[in-house]
Length: 444
Ligand code: ATP
Image (cartoon, rainbow, N blue to C red):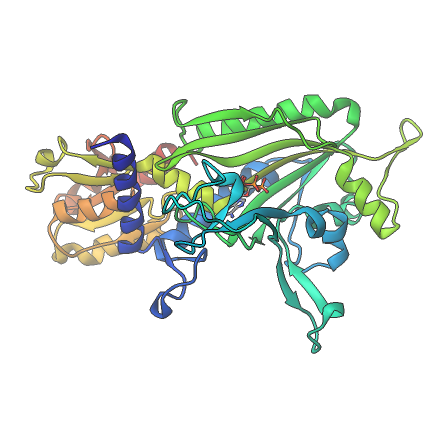
């Protein structure tokens, strides 16, 4: 099988697992779905929240100089005029007259040939604005047009002074936001990688221009460290792409790219945006967004370092990295199937961190009590149906890092067996030590 077919097969398996086990499925599927929109099911939504919480903890809660924001999705339309989105946030598109497929010109290997059917009968490329439009108020005319935000960072710039005054922060400091963004992508594809509705996690760090490059380096390193340590990305799974062509206002930009089954793709951007954003909003709003540096008796327009990552892409990257089919392991646990499908999810973001499995229904009362107790501290699931081996496999498939078996001996020795998903080794742990043991293993 060619490398391309293998990768396609791997992607198909991930998509199918996501659907089968309730991670992600097409939105409104009973009506045939809607292209570029995805629903996160019970495990997917748990995982999404866990990633959000991890990012928020890492970027806001553990830092005294980063504040949080939760702004509206619909802003004053002038925000998007000032940001340049209304005039420039567009892609060139072309339609194949033969197979009727629509393409983004910059994504076509050869812009004169349809990548779907090979026809050269294409329409003239034309600009297509990606902003999603709506109307605010009862009249549907041009005066009442508004837009769904195309990125979460613009409201951060707009609210910069409010946040600074309210928090008495001095430069350098950051503002972070997690929220939905909408783009009318011409060609949504690669599962959730390019969606029309997605969640972004962005942080804008405001500093004195003289220290801009230092802070750029700092945030780049911080973000790489996060991927290595918290999401367990190995060096061969991600790489840094350094932008050579920069926007006219930008001083430096890198993308953190990861190896999805369909190829390398951008996961996060770390950008030095100069004073562009605040200057534009100052100009368009007529409000002074400069910072008064009382220590040095001067006014400056802060420089911005941005870290911007998609939550959906993070989740897809983690799944792409985690999916595994393991044939050698199956015999170990007395199972007769050929392969064990397992998600090696980082314990910090796994939808279920611990499965509590009583050896027999007769032990349900004690086991369930233990489950209720542990569920206050970890994301737990209780499963009493089927053989222990089958229950392990179900947990392997959803990426549960630890399975706890409560057996008849537990009644006497007050200990349980903890089975590790990756090594499949088992430890006997006293119930009084369980919480510490799991916290350490999960990395809490
Ligand atoms: P691309 O070049 O892939 O379209 P971009 O450079 O336009 O992405 P940014 O505007 O920098 O992306 O957005 C920041 C992050 O938001 C991206 O790195 C990505 O993780 C996420 N993102 C952007 N567009 C989408 C989308 N259509 N679907 C899912 N996530 C997205």
